[in-house]
Amino acid sequence: MLCDQETMSRVPAMNHAVQPKPWLYCEAAEKLRELARQSHLPDIQGDLWDLAARFQRMAAYYEEQRRHATVQLERRIGVGPHRTP
Image 1 (cartoon, helix red, strand yellow):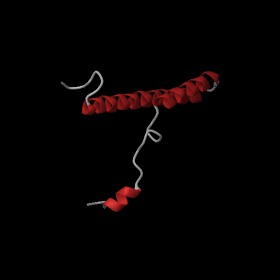
Image 2 (cartoon, helix red, strand yellow):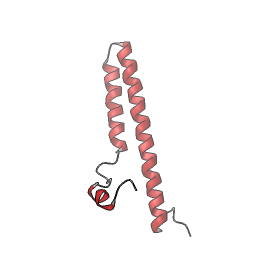
Image 3 (cartoon, helix red, strand yellow):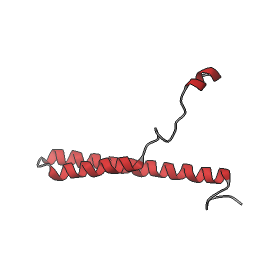
Image 4 (cartoon, helix red, strand yellow):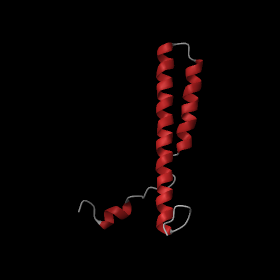
């Protein structure tokens, strides 16, 4: 065993405070797009547009992860539209 119970009890569990927030990535993407529009340097504009697209994809990825976890939880506890009969 890699970690004993005592060690594991000292490791904080991931909670909602440390999970990625999709809306933060969307906001960052929007700010990057705004900076790209304000820039007059084509290389910088391109880099900012690319970075904004990456942040938007990360937002979509984390939102899908959140939805998947919610569906799994609803199934496990037997609530919501995703419950199994």
